[in-house]
Length: 130
Image (cartoon, rainbow, N blue to C red; front, side, top):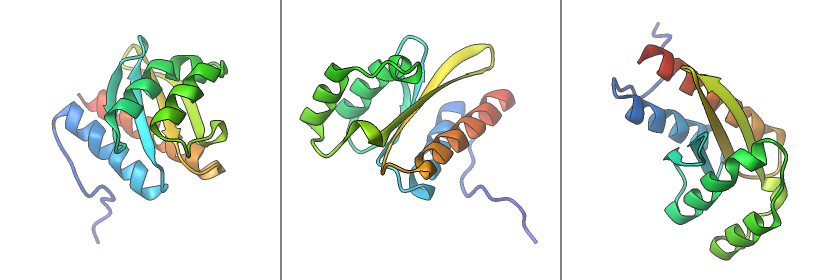
């Protein structure tokens, strides 16, 4: 019996990261998942709107430390009026000697946060293997 749960693989760190985020997006019914570096630059995103991802990425480091920015939600609502503050989660993590952030947008539920942590575990595995 094959115990390999991953459906897609890549030796490219960038592509493997994209596959990981896309799988989290699908498994947890999320709208957007972004991986952000410590400068607030988008490393990888999986949503359907790059402009939305760029704004989210820029603000994710502040969101991860609990700084809820009204301007952020105003900018995001211009692009996607249905997004509410309680539909966004962000978290900081470290791997490979660097600091990163993940943000997830989706229905207000615990599963959004579980998906975000699944993304972090996968990204750590990918970077460790690089």
